[in-house]
Length: 318
Image 1 (spheres, rainbow, N blue to C red):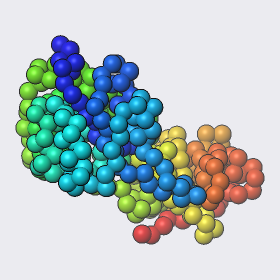
Image 2 (image 1 turned 180 degrees about the vertical axis):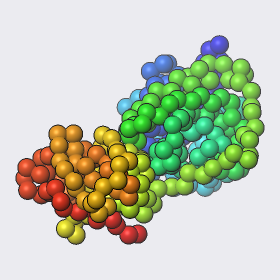
Image 3 (image 1 turned 60 degrees about the vertical axis):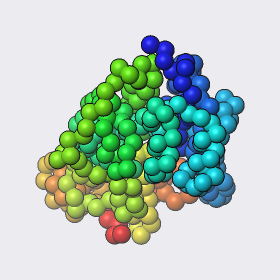
């Protein structure tokens, strides 16, 4: 145990999911020679350059930060070589690692992937699992190879996905699970052997596109509910009312009873949310967000005259 004390580690990661893994390890006393993350990007209404969460955290801990457009470009590889990592830890970095990078650390790379591989290989495993209505998911610690998340895994651990669990809630659960798994792995990496993935069971989790956010009220109640859950709290699912595009958040339940109303109809509004018709039932949706406003509860939107029972939410086309 304690083998990490003799290893020089470098961390590759970009979003909050990665930053929270890094923070857990730092608080446990694991040190890193350097951190690589994506460059600052324009975000927000003011389109200001915003540093990724991993950069902000690393600077707070006074760890050298590198932000190449591509980690595979010669200057980035040289910077990585100069850090002399024994092992590289990867969590949601967001770039494909070419062979020269993969072969650089003598003791290899360990990657945290938020699915039970070989299910949901790709950039958006949590979104895709929720869209599919999965009842279980988990974390896979894996070796990075040339294929997309197809390398052997060191360890997989499953958790249940509660029926109304949102992306934000599920991410919290998997950050906790992944951080502890990574910590245990780094204590004694030699304890973990490589297990090839069963190829016949592989599925893909491609990057989220805008069309994925569009609600279609002609789908079943569980399908509509799963789509809202998969993009809550960010970026939110899209529908329209009176021709105005709005976002929906928070699923509090659904019913599979047939209704006489057209899909998208707001049947009634109560404290928990609005009952909205789908193809084969209704979904209870908690909050609505109008353009340039913060999300509000449906009963608040009704109180201010912005929505009313009998009105219809419109499906959007890509």
